[in-house]
Length: 362
Image (tube, rainbow, N blue to C red; front, side):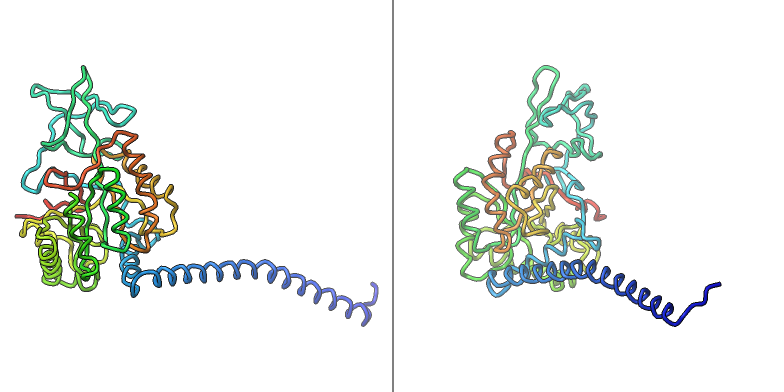
């Protein structure tokens, strides 16, 4: 057996040392770019938030945007509720009409239905099943008979939350240029925005309530604080426009996970005061990701709209969501080219609700 000399031992130590150095260098060269990328992404995200904050007056619009953003996202970073989940209850809480027969076939274009009819000749809508026509026929549905087919007009209700903002005028100008009416779920703003409240009403749009402050902790603290915010906002709107509002949208939706009490407590208040509330079954994602392009915003909306017969579209009227303004003309053109009727919410609009107002026991 060959004798291991001191020189051999020194050589082996050097080789092992070189191996360790090479391994360490490999990990450093691999991890450094990854860590640097994560750090830069974090800094860019912080910078984007800071810019959004600075361009919104005193950060108010940004804070409203962030609260809407957080409410629409669950803990896993996904939509807190799938946009296609909805409960359509008819025209009002006390005046709903359920169709009695079942749909046999939905035509390829999604606008006409081949329906079986019974003695009364009324078509029916299956109130369950994603991808099918999942709403119920209300008294005001337009049904046109052509031989064996019954065509039902597909309707879209464009809604804008969280305004007025510096961009409300641009939104109203685009709507006016296209002879389109929409619905604005507004919050309480100071005198600088009063003209926008007035323009919304005077130009034939629907003025809805979205709480006075949009501060979740304050709004949902109790049914008393909830009622106070609605009364304060409605009082402001009546003073400024001469018109009371009778429709409401929950900040975060009726399916929100931020209210301190069960949502039924607040629904009961609305029912008692004759206020209908509307959620949505189509959304652009403008409050989920403020960097989405106009094309992406329109694609998100149309993906949902094409699965519904009546669609309530959620968008936001905020300085931090200017992409919504940039996408509005494209959205209107797309909807019109595909034959959709664009309407403001009124007493004939089906109640699109995530949590049914009928869930409250009398």
